[in-house]
Structure formats: C-alpha cells, structure tokens
Amino acid sequence: VPTGRQPTAAPGAAHDSAFLRACRREPVPHTPVWFMRQAGRSLPEYLKVREGIPMLESCMRPDLVKEITLQPVRRHRVDAAIYFSDIVVPLRAIGLDLDIKPGVGPVVADPIRSRADLERLRPLEPGDVGYVTEAIGLLVDELGATPLIGFAGAPFTLASYLVEGGPSRNHERTKAMMYGDPELWADLLDRLADITAAFLTVQIEAGASAVQLFDSWVGALAPADYRRSVLPASRKVFQAVAGHGVPRIHFGVGTGELLGLMGEAGADVVGVDWRVPLDEAHRRVGPGKALQGNLDPAVLFAPEAAVRAKTAEVLAAAEALGGTGHIFNLGHGVLPTTDPDALTRLVAHVHEATAR
Ligand code: 1CP
View 1 (tube, rainbow, N blue to C red):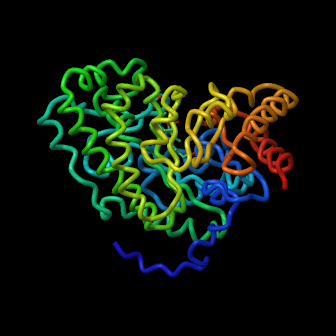
View 2: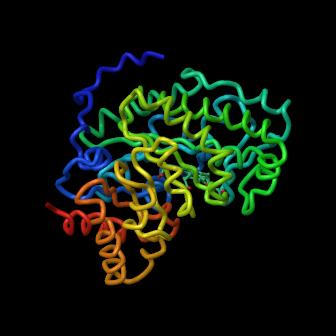
View 3: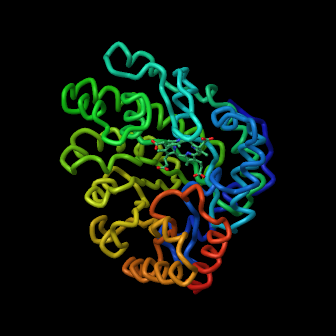
C-alpha cells in the first residue's frame, strides 16, 4: 500500500548510528544500548496514554504507537527505538480470534491442533497491517538518526501460543504435535514463517532499519530438536528478508545450548540471555556475528554499586568480540516494576564507560 508520505529525514538517516554500526561490526564511538521491552512497561507516561485502551487496540492506533515507541528514547536516550506492538499482532491481522489479556498475555479462542485448523492461517497481505506502515512512517520521520527496530515472533514461539491457546510453562501440547505429527508441525511452522516474513517485510519497507526475531520460548528445546523441527522455518524467515540488507537479530531465553544454531539460522546479531557470559557466547556463535545482551534484568533492583559491577562484567566479557559488534541490552525484557531512573542511569553509564 503506497503511503505517499514525503520523509523529512534523508533515507537511511540512521545508517551511521552506533547501533547499526555495531550490528555490522564496524567501529563505534560508544557501545550502543537499548532494552527489550523498553516501550510499554512501567513508564508513567506509558500507563497514562494507555489508560482505558486495550493492548491490541493500542497497537492499531498509529498516533499511540508513535508516542509509546518514542517515550523510552526521549527519557533514557537509548540508541535505538523498538516498534510498539506485540508478537501476536500479525496473527490477529489475518483474522484469528485472539486477545491479549492484562496480566496474562496472548489468549487464543480456538487453538490450532489439527490439519483442518491450519486453513485459518492464511497469508498476511500488507493491506492487513496498514496501521503498521502508517505508524512506522510517522516514527521514521520523527526519529531522524535514531534507528527503529521492527520485530516479530519466531515460528516456534508463535506456534506455542497457537497450539497451547495461551502462555505455557512446559509447552506440552506444542511438543506433543512436534514429536507426534512432524508433518503437521512442519506445515504449521512453514505457514508461520511466511506470515512472519511478510510482517517483517512490511516493517522494513516502511522504514525499520533492523529487525529482531523473538524466539522467546525456544530454549525449551534440545539442540537436535531445534535443528530438525525449528531451524528450517526460522531460516526461511531470515532468508526472506536478507535482500533488504538490514541487520537481523535473533533472541531467545535460556538458549545457551542453541546459540550456534540460532546464528546458523541466519541472524547477523545473536541475542544472549544472562546465563552465558558474552565471551563464551562468542565462542559458541563463532566469528562474523555481533552479540546483543546481557545484563540480568533483575540486577536493576540492586543498589547502584552492584549494577555498576555487573555491568562492568558484561562489558569486560564483550571485549572478546574485539572492540565492536556488541549491542548492550538486558538478558531479557525490562521487568515491569523496574525503576525507570535505573535504566536512564545505565544508558549514560555504558555510554561513558565505553566512549572511544
Ligand atoms: O519491547 C518493547 O518495548 C515493544 C513492545 C513489545 C514486544 C517487543 C510488547 C508489548 N510485546 C513484545 C514481544 C512479545 N510479546 C514477546 C517476545 C519478547 C519477550 O520474550 O519478552 C512475547 C513472548 C510476547 C507475548 C506476550 N504479550 C506476553 C508474554 C506472555 C507469556 O507467555 O508469559 C505478554 C504479557 C504480552 C502482552 C504485552 N505485550 C506488550 C505489552 C506492553 C504487553 C502487556 C499489555 C497489557 O497487559 O496491557
């Protein structure tokens, strides 16, 4: 869908930002910082604009998406914005009956459990998410040289919500399908790969200058199962967007044993949770890829001296990368009750400590 907008910022104004330079493993003026879940968590200004507006509805309102995406950039001076949305937005956009319940997460009315259910997963057309194109257009104009990260849920993590019907600790129904009906499982993941690729393409074409594929729950799998049952679909997503030349970030929780395979799936940047130090992650992922992470988000509840000490450990381990190719982040999303000022201080501290 052509938007007809005239960008005020030069195309690619963010090209030389510290964040994109680090993704490409080029020299940087300082280690760039952003936080997963920096938008839409505890910020008072977020709670104020969201008042009375359901989560999914807020994702479809470009004015609101623009404001919520910009809030952490203004407040913390992070090096990148992340588009305010949710991983289930493209699934809602193709007509699935699902909702995001406050305090719970995504809930699917009729879970996907059979071959007949697959028919409900039709391809995503750009026109299904016109509000995304519009919101990113507004954002890119306003952000100027600050890059915007688009994102999507990876096929495994999306499948887990669709098959379970909601959040799950053990993913038992998901694994039952994966082990019990590999053909149905492969077809499900393949459809989700196409939807995800189409959704990321919309975001890139609208102006996102990097994309992150969240496979948040894939750490539940052993490497052999990941390789056989998940990697082909994730690789399909990364290959589909490769031609745009924007950095592709891949992240999951508890994925220490999968880091090498997640790189192999086609990521340029591998996200690491707090369980594996970055020097060890670098050995597992191998040369040629940047790393993102990995301060334990719970550390931000400790006194400032402890935050500094743990941050110093992260930065010291990142030296294994050779001076660039590190994007500082938390090892998972900002926890809901985090003091926003602790995040602001952390950004300034990492910038200062790594200034070159
Ligand atoms: O990062 C940002 O600031 C942008 C906003 C964002 C992102 C990147 C939201 C808003 N959701 C996501 C991604 C997302 N959603 C992931 C991957 C990232 C991660 O691992 O944290 C996952 C797994 C979800 C699914 C989801 N949506 C959950 C988790 C449920 C579970 O299984 O434990 C929840 C609670 C949501 C709802 C949601 N998404 C976003 C917000 C602000 C909210 C809360 C909305 C509300 O209750 O009003």
